[in-house]
Length: 81
Image 1 (cartoon, helix red, strand yellow):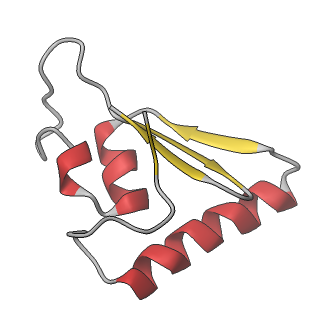
Image 2 (image 1 turned 135 degrees about the vertical axis):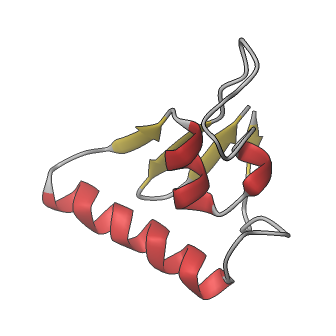
Image 3 (image 1 turned 90 degrees about the horizontal axis):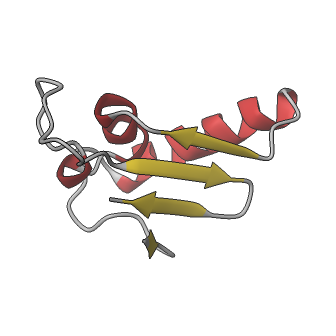
């Protein structure tokens, strides 16, 4: 498990975009009284973080047993692979 204090070093988009996506997710979570958001799909993890390494393959294919997960809370962003 990797608990990041900073955004990924080589994301698919800028830090500004990264911050905006996470802030937007947190806003929607707050509006819906959600404590956490768990993204357990390659495409969703890539969209939220921009970290291509989390998305094992862009075509949706992943080797058996490999599934990245992103957990977003109001205070933390946890990446699990």
